[in-house]
Image 1 (cartoon, one colour):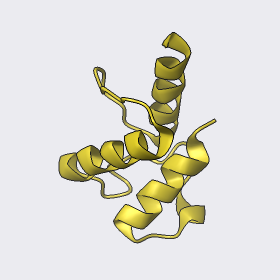
Image 2 (image 1 turned 180 degrees about the horizontal axis):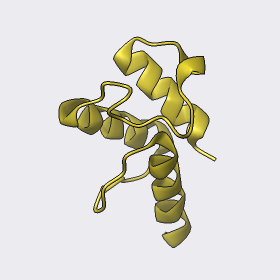
Image 3 (image 1 turned 120 degrees about the vertical axis):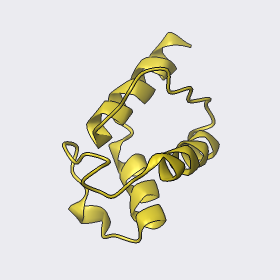
Image 4 (image 1 turned 90 degrees about the vertical axis):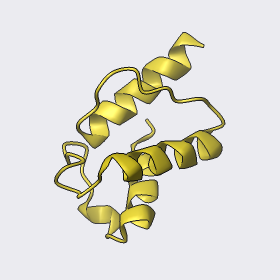
Length: 75
């Protein structure tokens, strides 16, 4: 549901082609470190207009998408 938005933010942050980002792509595969993750989450919060408090580990783009979906549904 939020995959396209997440992929665009990652592509912009990491200067990679958005088409190369798949749901199963891990953050490690995409060379995303903890600082990148914080910045990415802050950008997503601004774009989506929600607060994303990562209170559990996410390792793939799909994990983050599902996490955001759960947070939005719980509102």
